[in-house]
Length: 283
Image 1: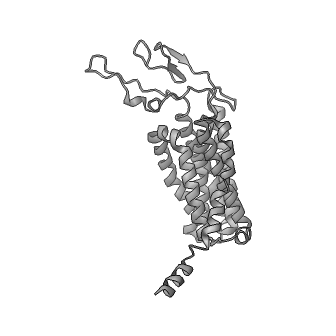
Image 2: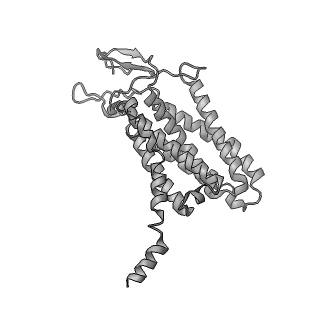
Image 3: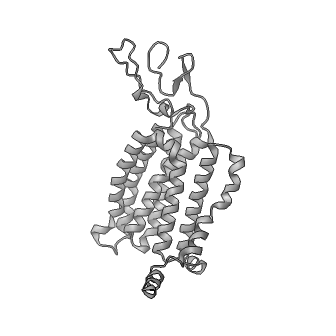
């Protein structure tokens, strides 16, 4: 809201003097990491449901197609964002949490009438994610059904398109999540990445009955999953470090393999059969 009680045009923001100024700054590294997290979210969900519902033969090609859909959507979104035709964007700097929720701060100068001055003070971090999700959904609907129909003939008809049906459910969910909780996600996403990556890694290693390095490297798929989680660990650590001083926190990246090493070292002590047998001998 500027001095004349008018909404600043999109791409502009009121300065300290309450005058609208065009946002000309480049996003900070933390902003790019946030956008990367929001871009990875539908891709990871795609991969999860493809792995869950699809056959082994068709899963790999569907994984690659999902990555292609999200990559093309990201490039197109950047090209359509000001400055149009370039992979760079200009943005307004995020100063506080309330910048994400300007609709909650509409003024009432006479304490009777409310002036609706909602604007995107964090331009374009709020809307660019929603545009990206729209392109992801459109490309998925154009490409994936044709691909699944050709390569998933071995599956029952009702099972072929389950990963696509799942996407039709989670895309509205992540869209509402961004629309309502975008500001909270902006500050919390590094911790969300760390917690979820640790939990999913532990669940995967437990379900795969990985209790030693030999069983870990027995299959290439397990190594791919492990390296993916390590990358997520590092992504979360770097994002958290940017909230303080990155240079002082880089040594923390050495802790990335820590959860895996801890799990393998302690898995033999928590094996259910061993606990039951020891309990039986105790009686």
